[in-house]
Amino acid sequence: MSIILLGPPGAGKGTQAKILEKKRGYVQLSTGDMLRNAVSEGSDLGNKAKEIMNKGEFVPDEIMVGIISEKIKSLGKANFILDGFPRTEGQAVALEKLLKIRSRSLFAVIELKVDDDLLIERVTGRFTCSECGAVYNDSFKVPKNLGVCDFCGNTHFSRRSDDSREVMENRLGVYHKHTAPLLEFYENRGLLRSVDGMSSSEEVEIQISGILDDKIAAKG
Figure (cartoon, rainbow, N blue to C red):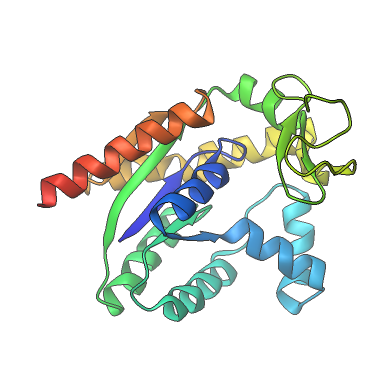
């Protein structure tokens, strides 16, 4: 079973992918995480992608398709969630070809619909626990005890350098230009479903689970 989560940066795709990974046993394929790891490791891929990512622009298709191809191959028949890929119609077509080669197909494409202005506020105020990765926000979700993680008690937090307003506005512009057209691409294939991405993570989880359960039941 192969699922795509679509939505602009900061919409909550990663959070929902991790929930599906934990509760349904899917494997999360986050191109963002893979690229950030490559950057931190100083690999050839990381060096090529670093400047592009810092500007909030898309990494070229040939790099992303290569990463996804190798990852899907390594998974065998395991169920997976794509978080951050595809981002262009070219990548979507390439993904269809990759899946067909491996006798696989997409089960569902789920869009997390969000409001741009609220999303910018959510993302620019975001910070994470350096120990366990718990996500907080200056406006929406601060630790119960200021400066102390609710989950692990750590007192060190970090903010991503690409969470600035300028970079976020650029990333949203790029998303609407290149990725939003994928909504029609997948709608025409009968795969697209949408949820309210501005709801709480728990409410979004319920919506996504309902979509998946309905599709599973329909396939009988």
